[in-house]
Length: 100
Image 1 (tube, rainbow, N blue to C red):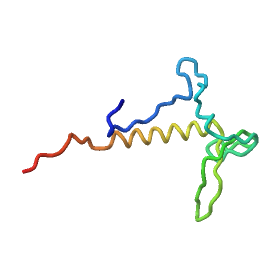
Image 2: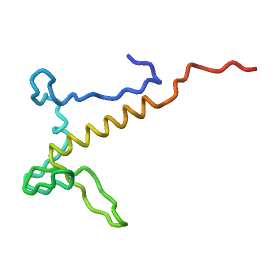
Image 3: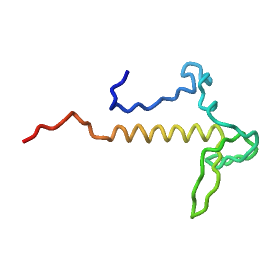
Image 4: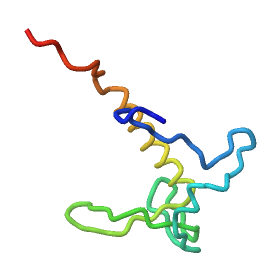
């Protein structure tokens, strides 16, 4: 059990580090996949399996944002790294400061 004020960030638990294979609790199992779509992220491929990852707002217009597995994995890694960096940048709180 962790302390109540400790922030926990998950690691990459969807890939077995020893085999490189997907685990039973893979990231992919949490998404609904469409069999043939267009990835709107880095690869820009057409006719690949994609999942909706949320709405996007650009220049005042909205659209549905879709990603393939490879790009979703890259995005997930970047989000994880950003959260770890943010956690490391927080000042340490040692407890109440003594009054003067």
